[in-house]
Image (cartoon, rainbow, N blue to C red; front, side, top):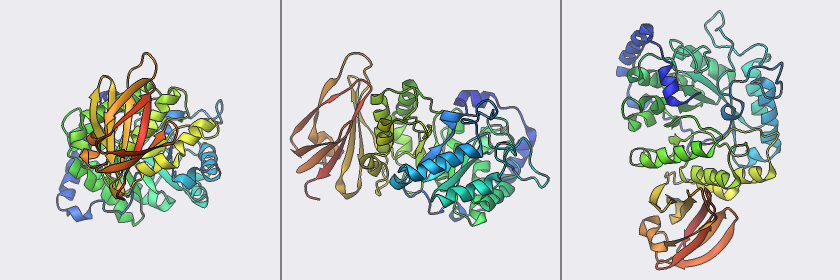
Length: 427
């Protein structure tokens, strides 16, 4: 749960891991591709809540009972996701990250929850979450230990998959710490995918496979998509503008590799939404929400739903922006151009519509005017011969009908974004 390089540097040589992964490679050699994921899940990007960025690995329930990783925390979040409109707009998965486990497996080799912080066990928590009309996500690691040092799934893939299924888990976030060889890391991710499928339970599979491959070689995204429902590419998001901006920079720099592989059932994951926390200005929160929608990213909030401002809540629950994120066409957006610290991103939508985001990256001065040729948007066809344009963010406003030869002028706050929806006049 730290930066990519710190994670990789923390690895130790583990010959046993190499031998076992070699065995897994032999096992997987004869597995037809048709046996891979194909689980019918995540046909639109996953939406929900994940504890890590906000609550990290806080296990001190004596000193901080309201913010430690415990069943109490997740039950409270489940209550709020149900009662405060989150479930209604699509936030469905309540996800546990690292630090939920006991320090050792049980006598039968099964993972077990920390008995003090989760006294009722994960099955009870899953039942509670399900009773609220929500789904439960859980965390494990492909290696010998999780990133925080708890028991890893290496050597226990089948056992852990069966355990998660028996508990009623609906999503697995599978991290990549503490395995000897990143070159063979892929075999562990593949094996767990197959193990989850064999349980017969529908479990969304969230991988960090390419994140650990990139420092050493270019990941095979066609292969990754065959096994994972979404996958992390870059380091953990922090509650800061620099972090959000670095993720956007990484995505645009690698878009020729990653954009085309995304689609129903498999998505690039730029990590959590940190809207409603402490580090982003209001304009920067708008930028994260808008660009995560453009990128067809999983919308996994990491915040405290007990103490979130009405403004942040309204942004996260904005139905128009969520509709762009969840658009059934399932095409990821991309950076169209960058000029004079203004970025223009666009995303094709169903029914010949398009979403366009204009981001002002300048961090000095005031709002900037920006004029764009309508004909340059949507690969030249979005407004041919004309389209209706609606500004969705920062504040919704119908801008009217624009012909293909028109120009659109707008003003964008520093580090802020204007999000537009373009609907063809012929539709």
